[in-house]
Image (cartoon, rainbow, N blue to C red):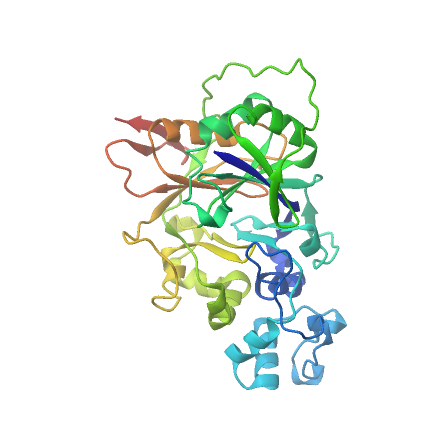
Length: 399
């Protein structure tokens, strides 16, 4: 198998829930106005000048519509009003706006009960304003992608975090290398600190052909020069040491054709930023066992969505990609207190027992907690959760 080191230099950040409206202008641009590329060196764009949304003429403040160029944060109604003012139709306006891209190729936004976690490349990070409400991890991260059969991550079947537990996750944990996971509909990304890359390459060189993406082309990765005394230790079993909990809502992992994104742009904006009250009325509150979780990723032109069933029902039929079986996923949340970025082996603690039982899983790390998504039905070998008196879960193998 091949291990690809993607060319994106990534930042991981957190936005406080109550402050999200300070950032919606930049986030909407990253999510809906990014250049859409799939392995091309240069984005293919309409030959129109690159402008920022702030250059567009918003209706006057006296009409009650915020002006983006004045620094006031936009509301969903502001974007809808802008679309209708200039084009008369929301969807055609969204298509028009897509010719003014943010030069970002790696963007992910995940909403949890605690915060919004952003993973974005350095170009996209420039679209976000500096603010005391934006917490940024103090490292630059690189994304690794395991590819089976060659080609890019879009050209192979998803391998799954449990399939790379023994070959990638566990060896890195044994070398005290912290990882940050992002599973998408298309593939799994393993994020490592840029400064750890030499150790990552040395650790995994025996298992993989390591390639690096440079200017859109895949080339052999250079040896970064690790000293000869580097020895891989024997793998040891890791107990699950962080408390686990499982919300009652079920989730789907899906995608959509980027060409249809303008069709659901306003719905996605509403789900991502503006519909707290709607969500509460649909699924109840977190005391009833439901949690608020929504993940949107736009990476090299491919879209991935993770949402609960109630949110999925808001989308038009036949728009979202789903498997023939339409499987649903149960979430397990890892951590009682914020996990931080320095502890190693958290992903391994979860993925190794799942791999031993051959249970498919997605895994999404966020700024404060980790989240594993397990198939609702996993065959004769299942990972069962037994509620403890403190409300947490203990995971056990059922043969």
